[in-house]
Image 1 (tube, rainbow, N blue to C red):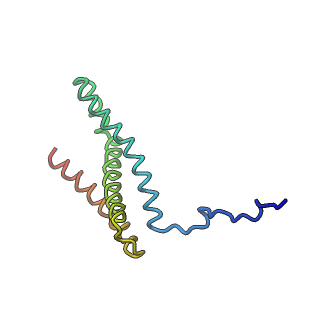
Image 2: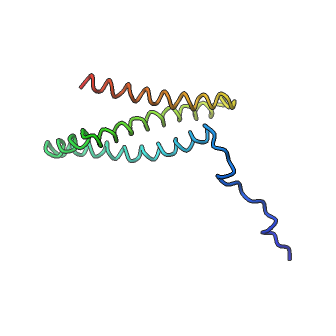
Image 3: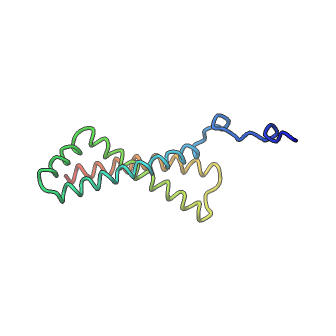
Length: 130
C-alpha cells in the first residue's frame, strides 16, 4: 500500500507569500465590510432612539457626541468610503479592466488616499453645516 500522504504537496501558507498592496487591500476590504455591519447597528440604534422619544434620543446624541462616539463615527465614515471605492475597483475588474500589476497597485493607493480625503471632507462639511 502506497503512502500517499507523504507525497502530497504542501499548501502555501501566509508565511510563504510576500504581502503586496492588493493583498492588503483585499484584507482591509473584508474588514471594512464587517465594520459596516457594526456601523449599521449604530444607525439603527440612532433611528430607534429618534422614534422612542426625546430623553432616549438625547442620550444617544450625547453618546455619539462624545470623543469615543465621534471616533467611532469617523471610523464608520472611513470604512464606508474605503469599502465603496474598493467596490468600484472590483466592479471595474468585473468589467475586465485594470488587471495590470502597476495599475492595480496605483488603484489601491489612490483608493486609500481618496477614502481618507472623502472622510475628512464629509466631516468638515458636517461641522460647517452644524
